[in-house]
Length: 71
Image 1: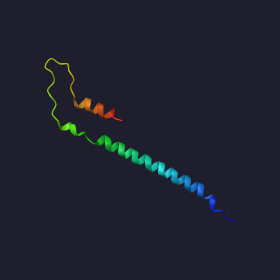
Image 2: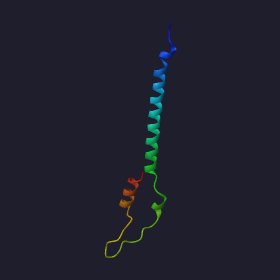
Image 3: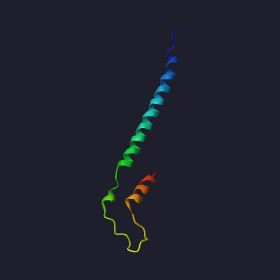
Image 4: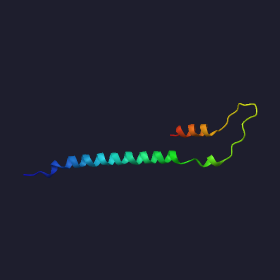
């Protein structure tokens, strides 16, 4: 006699593995798209650096660093 319940756990396990893989793929694509999009404030003109040096300057390098620290 053939029992149809023999295939049920394997099928269910495969479904959950597939769902987990799909979720991971979606999360990866969403993360990559978030990193690729430029912030809207990147078009603004920065003020000139202080004549004698010092002070804080929001350079492109600093902006890239801030992008890497976003959660």
